[in-house]
Structure formats: structure tokens, C-alpha cells
Length: 429
Image (cartoon, rainbow, N blue to C red):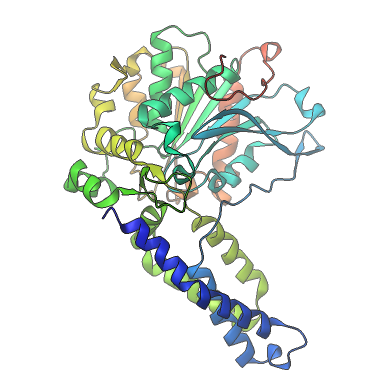
């Protein structure tokens, strides 16, 4: 299995000539000066060539592409800036300009998952909060691009990164963890609370997170329990090939994660590609564009370090260390009962097939010393996992509730600290 990545790279190289030929054919049959372009035959050839090219290409990291937003009736231009850097993560700020800054709206740190997709998968999440919050997001780095000389990155490091970022953005910070980050985020908050750290966030929101995967276990959870940690190490961990900067780093490659996601709903993806083909043949450009946009994002994947992936599988999905009170961070116990000052909101989807109903809500039971007035649970009817943080119901029903929650627990706006300059690895805070 250690050679899987090498064979994957070789397959891409071997198919490159065919991809180039079919792309040239697509351009030929889409050329307005070609009479066949306007025939069903020409459109069929062009559509088939495009689908072949799209299903055999490697998708690069997408851009957020958020150009502007409206804040209190003012149109504000968006400027992306990196305000904190480490080898495996950049903290990205969506700067909305001077007028929006003077409003002192709540700061929101969106912690994106390290689960195979880039942070841009949360583009809709970011866009929803730009009018009401000063938004930051964790922009995780593809592990295959990080040289071995930069060291390891595991679950303990993830918790350290989150802690550093929360301290960087304090005070009056609200943290939104989407799916997998729920465990490291709540662990980081508990550790800060245990030390009476003054930089704890004002609130934390967990969306579709695997806090306790023993509740309403999904196919993903059952697979981890059935196979165990050793099976994943034998079958999922490979070394980055020599063509990449992270040569010889052990990773869980994004293409394996994507294969798993695709396999869970293979009929849906096959139908979607068939529909795209029909849209292209019929000349329905708008419908085809929507399909293109979705798959440009969905098929862009990144690698995870082996140590992070294996530790997450072991602690979260096999041992259930957090809900059992057995989780430790660098030898220190992670006790959620220490959380007393940070308001807690959880959001779940009724049809979530990745994090079952009750898995995120479990945080309320574990934070037993947090007053009931500082807790809020929301179960969104009719949505699956991705509907929890994206789509129409998220924008219309979930996001407004989160905004109201952060406003309720926002501190003194006069204490808002402006974001600092970029800090790099090894530099003192």
C-alpha cells in the first residue's frame, strides 16, 4: 500500500496525453467558426470530451473569490490577508475595510476541518457571516507540500494551533468549528479554562461535530469501530512521492478520502455527471455551470499527515477518549467540566449521515459546569451533513441563529484588539 501514491502519480502522467487530445477536441467542437459546433453531433462530442478531461484531471486548490459584501447597507470590498502562519496552517482574515472595522462587530474564527477538502469548501459559510462578523478562517496546508524538515503535525499540534489562534484574536472572539474540528476546539477551550486563561473565546459553536460518536453511529463511525486503528494504518497510510515537496512524508492522501466520500453516494455522483453531460448536449450552460462549480470544489482534495489522521481515528472514533474523560493533550487531561465561561451552541442536521444526531449535542452534557443559560442546541430539519454549514436552509435558518447567539454573548466592543502582523513559526507572541 505504501506505493499507492506512486501508482496514482504514474496513472496521472500516463493519461495526460489522452487528456490533452480530448481537451483539444473539445475546443474544436466548441469553436464558433466550426459548423459542427451547432449540431447535436458536435455538442455530444464536446460534452464527452469535457467529461473525460474533468474526470481525469487533478484539481488544484480553489480560491475563495469573495470580492465584496454589504455591511449595514454599505458595500465593502473584501481583501484576504494572512495574519498568522505556521507550516501546516495559515490564518486568513477577510478584511472588509475601514468603515466595517469601526463598527466593532464580533470576531468570528471559523475552524475548517482537516478532512481532505480545502477550507474553500466553507466559502458559503464565510459569505453568510461577512455582513455581521469580522471573519477569520483556518486555511490548512496540503501535507504533501510541507517538507519533512518542518516536522510532524498531529492532533496535539492541531490543539496547539487553535489555542494560539484564539489567543491571537482575543478578546471578544467567537469560534465556529465545522465538523471534525469540534473535538480539538472544545479540547483547546477546556485546557485554557483549566488554566484560567483570560483569552478564552466568548462563545464556541460546534456544527455537525463528532464529540461522541457512540450516539447514533453512522456508517463512517461503524467502519472505524469495525476495522480498528491498525487496519487504517495498514491500508490508508502512504508516502508522498518524489515529485512533491513533502517527499517521503507519511500521509493519508486526499484521493483516498475522496474515493470514500464518492463511494458513499456513488449513484448520486454518477447521476450528476450524466445530467451534466445532458445539459452540455442540450446547450444548457447555466445548469452545467452549477455542476462544474460544485465538482471543481468537491474534487479538489488535500493530504493529511499520517500522525494526525491516525490519532484522530484512534482517539475520536475508536477509543471515544473525549466523552469518556480519558483524552489527554501532551500528558494533561482534557476535562470539559472545566468550561465555565465560554457559551456553547451546537448545530446538527436531521439527515446527517456523517455525524449522527446527538453526537454534537453531547457537548452540552460533558460541559456540565456551564450554566444552562449559556447553552443552545439547534437541530435543523431536512438537512444532511453539508446542509448544516451551506445552502439555502443554512443561510436562512441556521446562520441567523448563530449571529444572534454571538451577539448575545459578545463582550465589551471597546476591548476589541486589532489583528496583529503575520507571525511565522518560531517567532514569539
